[in-house]
Length: 393
Ligand code: AMP
Image 1 (cartoon, helix red, strand yellow):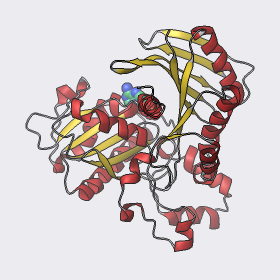
Image 2 (image 1 turned 45 degrees about the horizontal axis):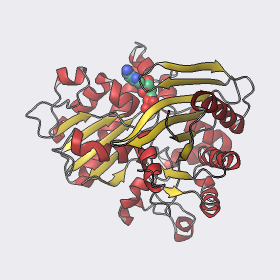
Image 3 (image 1 turned 30 degrees about the horizontal axis):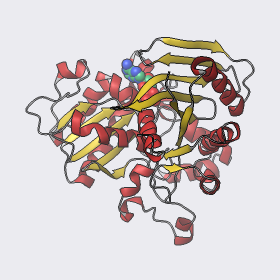
């Protein structure tokens, strides 16, 4: 293989990666996609080629932490792509704060500023930054690029990002940031080709996966999003509740005596679909079950999505298109149908046949507002930014 760029998405218990071949002509070509899962419990490596064929699947008993995981990945990369060079490494970094409105080449100064944002995203940022540090120790000459989930939303007006608390608290960084920005940026970048009639209009993109949010796009730019200060806000998610009355959180502390750690675990890991159903955080699993609790969880998910679509439609002054993406949005015709039916008042008329086969256009030809399914590709977005910033394309 030719020289390649590596895209890393490092989390607390997993290291996801993509290998992209040096761009020729059209741009980056995916060579392999994989992950090391179960870091700290029962680690394993699985990798697939661009055609979905298995390239690796093995247990990694010696991997105890993120650094070990990177070493294991490096040795797999050497065994597979021995003679090729790593041109650059692009990282997904959850938080770029108010300052990083664009992907950025990592320098010691940038890294120090990103560390200051750890308190704003304590469950993700430390792992993202640890991966950057581990790569610079092992490959000091390879340039690295940080791509932020928040950057795409820095086009919001000040009123959209305001959290109405006293100035000293806002100065500490308490404002709305928005997340899933790499996914929305990718969708925005392909709209002209995938759905030209809405590309320059008013569009709501529904990124519905384990994490879920909506983004209101006007002429391809983010004007609002359902996620705010953290990725807990907005829609109901697999294990996160979405927007809840802050008074309920106070009650957890004051009347139920929960600690901050308990509340953190509750809000990030034990709420949402999992809490409502008591069965699973996985939408596919819930859709296949008949228990009333599973139905209630799905009903709430759809209800919240439709309600927030209405709110963002108000922000945009009406919409021209609705786009579904991510695990649930791309794969569940039932959830898409139910959300579209609940949003019929906006002028969306779903085409049952097109929806059942996955679109891309899933609304009828006469529908006033069109609806679409467009697969997201956050890793490609990171590869594009990395290539552009490093002058590779
Ligand atoms: P993501 O975080 O984007 O990988 O999405 C994960 C979510 O997508 C999980 O809740 C999965 O159950 C859901 N999902 C994946 N495939 C399907 C499917 N065919 N039907 C319903 N949900 C699905």
